[in-house]
Length: 322
Image (cartoon, rainbow, N blue to C red):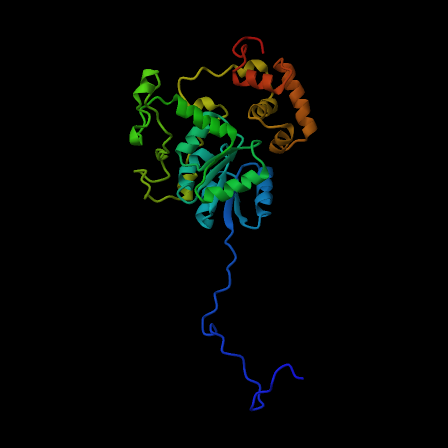
């Protein structure tokens, strides 16, 4: 017996007309646009490592690399990236000097070995959207920071967060009025609790001469030629950023060679031997040999002890003996 009775006419009937046949088909899903990143660091090893790390993610593309602030500005102006990763200490135009002009193009994350609180605070004042210190984050955390900065979410590693907290605690100026009378409780005043405080407010830094024109206005023309005329403002000591600090220790008494002094600066910044070797383009064995001689000259038995004497925080830092 057949499964279906034949139609009286003997011809099979077509299926009913689909009710949605006349509706337009949805457009095909477009692949998500990749985040475009410019990496600026004067160390080619660091640049190559960052580029390889970020380019290995399917949603991130490194569109340009730069070795100083001027190249970073030119690359950002040309490629219009979503994020700029910016080192602090670079030859020519350093990262802090270029920062106010880069943030007009794209969000900027400082990615550096510089951990001085004055530099962290100045970077934030000039518009940085995050501050990451090498050695304080994992590869995945760096990738998350790049993604989040594009969405306006700031990232700070512990050293940078500590510098920001220190600024909040040290600033005694009256802050903005709080809603609903918060911070004005009589009971709090009775216990001697201060009723005023100040939250960190990001302010526009003063314009640097020769970049934004004579008036320094944001609408003034900016060019890479003008940016290249900016003199570097970064030194090897953080004392340049503040006034009234104690005099730097007399490092000449340690009698370090130029290379030893360079390595001691890197030790004090928190680099390990592998990072120092990559920065100075020497082998780790050579780094160890230099460190042994440095320890002997500074009469130190550890990196922390040597760093404390070098930056002037050891009890005998300003005495005649090293």
